[in-house]
Image (cartoon, rainbow, N blue to C red; front, side):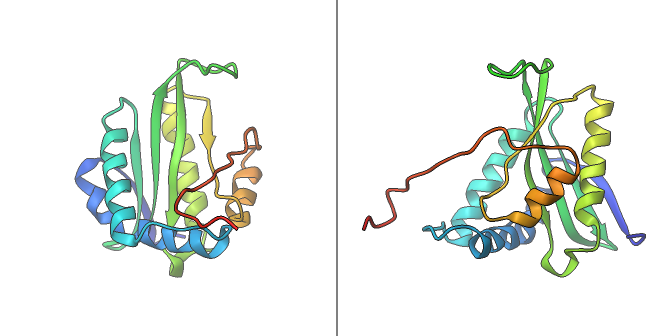
Length: 166
């Protein structure tokens, strides 16, 4: 997409991500198994706090996709110390914490552009290990990650106290 640019940004841009996070939060509710979800304002407050905490870790970054002045997508990458306790990894491990593309811009290659940027930034930092979690039911995201050479290595299961038991 020629009219979309990708920029590396920091904590100063976090508040611009709110509408994109909320769109992803809504998308998750449409594709995932039924659950009790946080209301949008609480979801954003928690995610915003996490972004600021993750950005304090050396090497962590946000890539922001813009069409003109409009934010149309972003990738939040948290870089953590390694090695991992289970798999052989390097001294630093990256985790893609969020990949969000505005609903009107989905299917135009912006997610791929962001992932290309993530790969380039990680290569520049000498980080070869990348973890990505995808919500169960978010099949399009899972296919995108698998096309890029990622594979399932762990399944998370959950029980939520807020949900009624039958």
